Image 1 (spheres, rainbow, N blue to C red):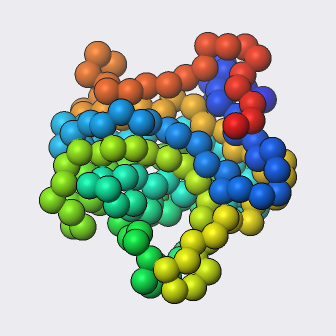
Image 2: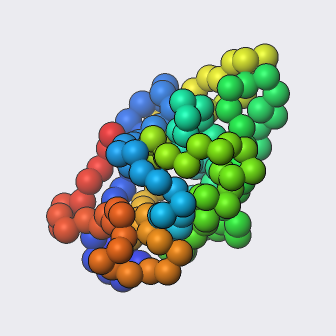
Image 3: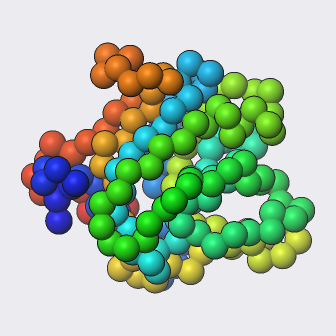
Length: 171
């Protein structure tokens, strides 16, 4: 199944009933004040639960994408925002958010250490457990870009799209 423009894309498939369905999006530290914008195309179905988590100053911050809300009570994680108008209908859509605007309310640290997509559930006092996505859960990502507030292909810190006609499946 190709991307929004019919070319290739990244397909992520959960290979087991256990695990947090995690994938590393970006693992090199960068200054979020210089590159605050994250944009991407996605295709996801109603039953797939996944969020973005960013590591800054050694702490994890959660950005709600399609996972259920958490209480975050007594967790070493904070919800800093959510991606607006997410559609879980199995069709291609675009999303964009300003990571710096979300983070600045919670921390003075400006170096993003990692960005991941994963599924964790809040199961009580200081307790995160693997989410409940079933084996075979799938979502697609394409045209993932970390950029300056204005888009300039030369100024993007990170851009991924698949050139492999076979795609990338699994994790």
